[in-house]
Length: 292
Image (tube, rainbow, N blue to C red; front, side, top):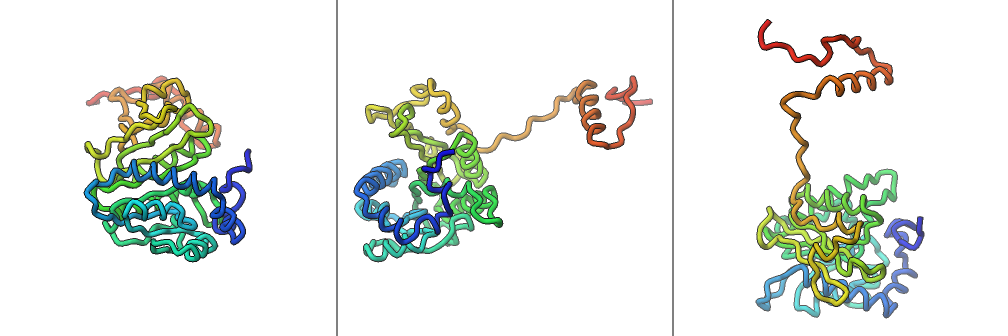
């Protein structure tokens, strides 16, 4: 297991201490990457181009690097982060957004429908780790996406750039977003590049509609690429899920029933567990007649 991923080293409020927060914010490379990711997130947010400022939430805002890009686009923003050290640096830098110290895994605590949109850069995957004995990733993801859905206006979007550790983690995050009521899916930029590949959850508050169709990701030439362009990437086949707006319902049982073989198999499993199970006979799993 690689230790290069910060979420595997320590909880965010501990990893991003005073030294790490200042080092993070003073790196020209990180500043440039953060700016590019935020620009792309705002592009995917697809806000109306009418010149009116919108109120956006920056989840995991850190020292305010993404917020500066939001400000440059003429919008107002709230920043939420769990690291006091990061927020202290943001205050020193006199960013324009309002800052809130909080744990997104406990819910956002904002008024319903107050936001015009939300972005997050490299933060949501932290919810998949149990940093404390009281942490259950599934409950934290449920609390986060449920509160995010409630505080967004109807039809508003949330664009969350994530670094999932594997396919299972990606599907876990997306699954809880869908259960909260969001429609949308995952956009992958540069799917065939190891270094440039980026994933964005593009979620719309409300049921599927024309406005909630997931955009295409960017290809190596910087132009958009369709789902078919990525079909050769085995891992990527699980990514484009814009048509999966809700968790699939359990398949209905066949009208003919489970069948004798299935019943015998289940009875044998019960016996191995030490349970008392009726003996197998010629009548096992046989359908009774409507009348005796």
